[in-house]
Length: 365
Length: 223
Image (tube, rainbow over all chains, first blue to last red; front, side, top):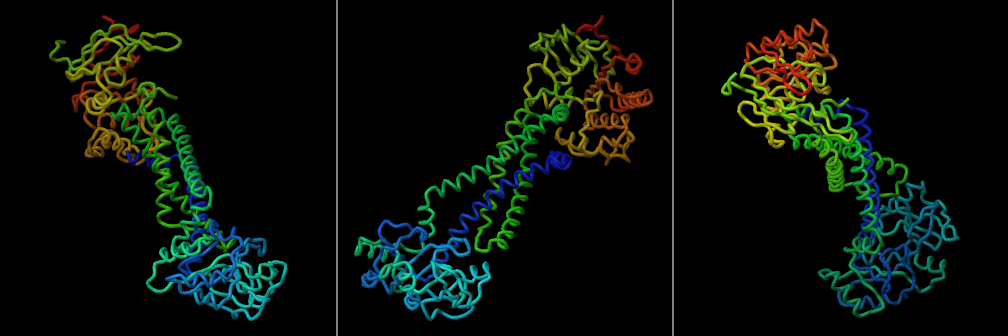
């Protein structure tokens, strides 16, 4: 029967290609959208972890999403945080969301000395740290995406800043300004949005966070190693969004296979009669239909991975700041999804084929 | 013919096709016995029930009433799996329209049939040699002449050496030259392999090739 399955797929090339392409598009849709969402979140979380801090302290009840953060925290809280048992150092950070070249970024305003004290080290690839209020630092990905070089002027927050240095991408924000510059520019003197906290060696981040919460009830401290989960949990509907993408891919596979196999069964009614006359049972006919569907879906899944890898390469060239996650598990999950859609989609046509009356099938024109 | 020698036994067979347009009684009490190793031709005008009787004997259709047994085994009342086993092991079908699978080669058609029957491919090449298709076994049916396609279909029907060969108008789509060759082939196979053959035809010339002629009219066997 395997031979017949393969020969059927090869014999009906156009039908097979359309089916494989449609399943592939469904799989690519799943992988690209899922990969972009997860990639952006995990890349952002990785950058947070790379600051070297173990705990992040924000106003109580605030979001983990820096883009939605306010600036209602007095900088003086830093001294109080540093008195908590297990805390080594705290660095106040004022975050602000703005656009550069029509793309939204979260920028950090901080003191580089304090940042280094909590473990945040910016590895300069070009230029140097800022020396005055009119300078900023860019990460290498943003600089490469926009073609910025050291010394270039950048209009930002109603002022013009010169690029003092370009640091290796992957630590904290993509744009850094001196804390005092950002405070003055935004009329937020003495305020910050959060604190990065370094804990003493051997201390447990979650326990230190709990102690900060207990000491300063107006604040909310969280261990940064759980930042990614916290972000996913905080974005309302993100899990539902993943669910919708997954369901859409499944439904597309299901419908494409259902339609393809249904059409195929009608077209091959006579062949089913022949197989029945040769002694094929209903179960064997069902297996034949499901087998053909599985082969088409497996090819579709492979096509989907090819589409996805192509999309990823294209995105990397055209939108270098987008991060798309593509892992073995994602591919395995999407392949299983396609196969599940294929089996479900083939069941009705398969049962229909199995119930075909052999004599009627043999006389089918 | 006595009961002990009968290989195919049909008794009081009725077959009614029901549809919205009304019932159509294809068989009206058929009694028939065919001995083991017989080559019988079932003749009669179109619509007299020949093919219906053939399908019931082959386990492709179930009678509305009556009994049918092949090699001592009752077919009426059998389930799908048992009937499929009967079709795959005991019988071989040859159809007017050849009914080869178009996506497979000639050899592929035979190999698939053997796999469905739960048998290996041993003997396929020799059989194709015997029916004169050894050089064309890799071709697909559409690349063969009609006579060659029917020879391939006969080879497929005989590949598992069935005890019963059922042929439904096997020369109906062939010219006289190819018809003669097919009848020669069937006769030769019958002599060599000793199968029981039940051949349906409305052509008296074709029926003459059989050792026994059974006439049907209006769903009944003529005396």
